[in-house]
Image (tube, rainbow, N blue to C red):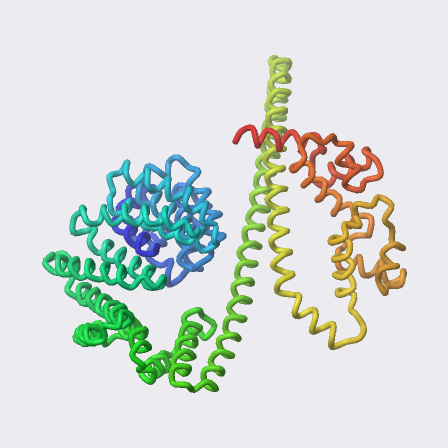
Amino acid sequence: MRHVILILFWGLTTTIQATTPSVSTDSIHTLKHVLKIHLSYPDSALRLLDTMEETNTAPLFLLQAQRAMLYGSHNKHHLVINYGQKALQHDSLQACPKYYLQTLTCCVEAYRKLNEHHQAIHLLEKGLAFARAQKNPTVEANFLFTAGQTYYQLNKKKEANQYFQKAIRLGEEGSYKLKPYLSYFYGEIFSILFDEGKYQEALEYCDKREKLIQQMSSFKQIPIGYIDQQYAYLYSKKACVLSRLNRKAEAATYYHKFKQTRFSHTPQGQESILVYWMEIGQYDSVIQFCQQQKPHDTITSDYAQQLTIQAKAHEGKKEYKRALEYQKRLTAINDSLNKKNIEEEMAELATIYQLKEKENEIQQQHEQIQKTIIIRNLLAGAFGLVCLLLWMAWHHLRTIQKKNRLMANSINTVLDCEQKIETLEKETSFTQEKEEAEETSVETDSHLFKRMEQIIKEEKLFLNPDLNRQDILNRLPIDKNRFAKIMQENSQTTLPQYLSNLRIKYAINQLKEHPNYTIQAIADESGFSNLRSFQRIFKAKTGMTPSEYKTAIEQTISEK
């Protein structure tokens, strides 16, 4: 999908200049400058975007789109979706076609990386409709092919093939500008067929690609270096598939053609021939190539791929001990990669959580300002006092309803983030806690609290309105004098407050899942001793009563 993003960057500078307020030509506070530095200096680019948002240097939706693109370049998929979806909600974004398509592309890529393929398909359908309306066959073809890849990942091969063929048909019927993308399509379909063991069909796509490259070589607009690269890729793939078809002599001929290309002498070119070397038993060449590559960071998927290739090469040489050594290193790298990915995802979710909190705070400040203005207007004139009071009552009701809907959505978002963070924390901290517990016979206060919290949540003890301290002490090796200290240090609350928090969260979920339940039924099911206590605590925690929250949720659903 990255090649689609590169397409959209062409001419993006013109779009930026046409849609942003006029500023000094040497100013760094421009989207053009941010676009220029966002890959090399992402932190500086983010600070510039913050300043531009504070000073209203550019429209907010363009800044949000730029943030989505920036985070997409650094694989922060949750943040891409957070800002990209906000930008897409602005109708004005469609007035900037390149920005709109770029934002769609970034969000599609993020959803695919997060395995949320149905969301990706929904955005691809919007992108296809827009590309057709804009009469942009290049973007349309790429969106069609990406849709095919997404359906293929969902194991819907029939639908995937339909989209693949539509994309190919556009490429075959289009101008020279579409031919490089058509070559890419042929190559990707070859890889799919090759992996499925459909070697004869894969060979047919190689033949199509060879004819296409011959055609492209006659176009003066296409660089010679690109043609050389395409021939190198083609020859390496064709040598592999011919070898699998046991047509060894023909495979050797295409391997010889591959070596005659300039691209074959580059690291990328040599990497493309590794599969063929494995096919013909040139394991030493494979091992030598991998050892010559010196990664800047060993905790990467590229380095893990190198280890996999070297392990297979040593297996081919029947050097099973060496192969096992590489497999062990690969296992360690994969464990580190998983841990690194979890930590990065936790950091992203924490950032989104903080952004939501900040947005809530700004909203509350805005509402406070609105109330202040209303009060000042009331004091400004007595003549229209009655009319003004009537207007205030109406406006206040609307404001409360809007606030309740916003607060309900915010509460739901915060709870979702807390659940995701809690899940990720369990995954990363379980092993460490187990090792620390084995090293000492005396459990720390933190361990005891986590054990207590696990028992209360998993067994839903908090739903018992009569649950007290002694019930918990009976389950854990804690004396009553130490219990209060553990609660205060680890939750900053007392046991009744802690249980009330859990009951409120449970009640919120029940209100969402069972809209037909009465408030009394929710209170009873959530572990509250009486309705009055439930309403008082709910109001203190959320800023609204259970009935107001229920109404806000119903209004939000009806608006959708």
